[in-house]
Length: 109
Image 1 (cartoon, helix red, strand yellow):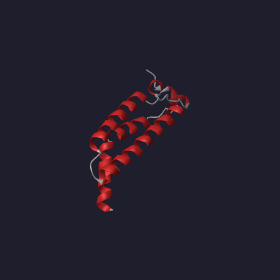
Image 2 (cartoon, rainbow, N blue to C red):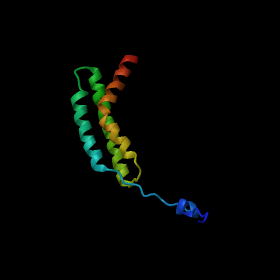
Image 3 (cartoon, helix red, strand yellow):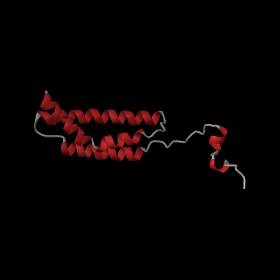
Image 4 (cartoon, rainbow, N blue to C red):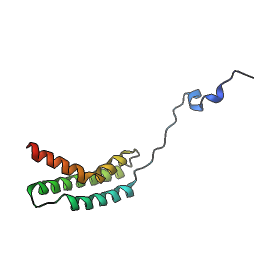
C-alpha cells in the first residue's frame, strides 16, 4: 500500500500544460431556420394600421439586417464560439421584444 496519489491528479495538472479546447463552429442552419421563423412571426404580429405598427416594422427590418450581417461576418471569420445561441434566442423572441420596446417608446415619448 503506497501513499502515491498520482491517479487522482489529471495529466494536465501534473505537467502544468495548457490543453486547448476545441470549440464547435456556429450552427448556421439552425440560425437560418430561426431567422425564417422570426420573419414569419414579425410579419404576423408587428404590422398594424397605425404609426406604432410602422415603427415596429421598421425596427424589425433593421434588426433583421443587423442579424444577417452578424451571421455573415461570423461565417467569413470562421468563428468558433457559442455566440450563435444568443442570436438564435434573440431572433426567435424578436417579435415580442420589438413590440414591448416600441410600446415603451410610445408611452414615454
